Image (cartoon, rainbow over all chains, first blue to last red; front, side, top):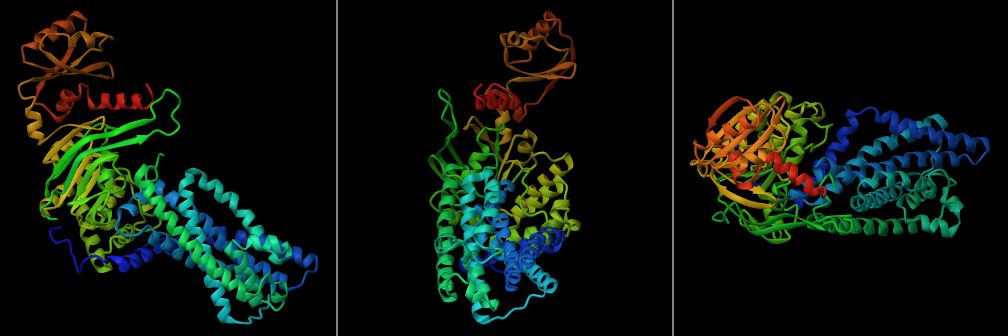
Length: 281
Length: 342
């Protein structure tokens, strides 16, 4: 122990920021490989709900692209579940386990911790979403007609940025609610499925409701992706893809900035009141 | 800043607001009051006190997790409230019974992750992990999932986590809490060895285990109800009681009210009664050996039989009793009753 090997001084600044993101993302990615049960609980079970909608649409002889809409919605539910259960309520669990105190006490930034959680969750969930998409496509013979791969990629990235930005914001807010975080997450789950149009085009709500629903990044994200991926997508779209991309960009910036603001506020509050790092308060 | 003390506090205080206090109940609780301490670099410093004495509150302030209500605190020369970004790279903390990290990750992966949060490059991190795991005897569990570790092994991992970053000042908050004798001894040996090998590094240990403080610490501060009552080396603290005679008696069970009578006897300074299964244990601090005769007579008068009698050297527990007027266990019970409004 007299040596305690050192090859170079510890990183600070942006290098520490990046290191923290990668390190915090690691448990998310590696955890998926070690808990195979997710294949059943997070892919197969949500897929059953998707299949249910598909049979309803088939029974009422809805346009075939609706089947594709539902499969895409099913795939995107994986991201929403990840955001509310593994992002929004996560800091609360980190507090309970004692990790939050260690995160605050370390020289890194809490924002980097949240970004790491988001990045890790996103990467892990991409695999789940892919499994649902492939299963749905193969089982129900869905045909795609992609009009622009570039725009599709941009919409997906922006949707993820805005969605996980919302998750980061909720994570810092959920610290305020403590034990109620679990109930709030449960309460948010189904209404968001509905209002974001996971299983039907959001245009069906009418302009005002669809516009209000657009505050949730998945609403516009899925609408734009459906327009870009399915032949009948543009006719069922809510706004033009370009406008939806612009709104998603704004949402991404607003949610991430708000998350940073709230996180700073929460950290100050934690230190002043001593309530947020104490597991029993 | 290397000429500055490792830790310095000036009139440090902390008051907690009590949420949901009813009418007539206290709305705030003083957790820490007027604490003035100075710990030079390279010292193994102990904070000794019962649960609820203010030890953890002090550690939280020093580790930048809690703002002081009054006064100031400095670690490695930096103000913990105003310069937390300077303090944080220089410190680390390990708490007893902590369940930090992620159960799905192996010991090595968890430690790597925490090393990254301090900006250590991966090569350095792994080299240190392997070295430290070897020393604490956890090398063969490096690839075990953390969720599969026993409490003792998990705490050894936590210890490695704390020392991995080679902190200038490390805070150990009841690090052996709930551990078996063997695991506690291993941890004490490790920490002592680290101090011996790393001159200039400082440890602040909080504990309510007297033996632990006595064995490890260069100096000890005894704290109760948020106030530091004494601060000196264990030897000097015990020397305060050198003139007194300390006896341990095992007697047949005592009736209620007998204890008060003993305390009135001439030459008796303190009596601590610990009821045991089918007997009573009495720790007596007497002004001189001669006072024992009065106690024996009083015991006979009250129909108690002496089963065992030993004269012994003073311990830190005796110092605590002398300062606080009750044993550590009694102080904890009193603190709990106060918190419950009793």
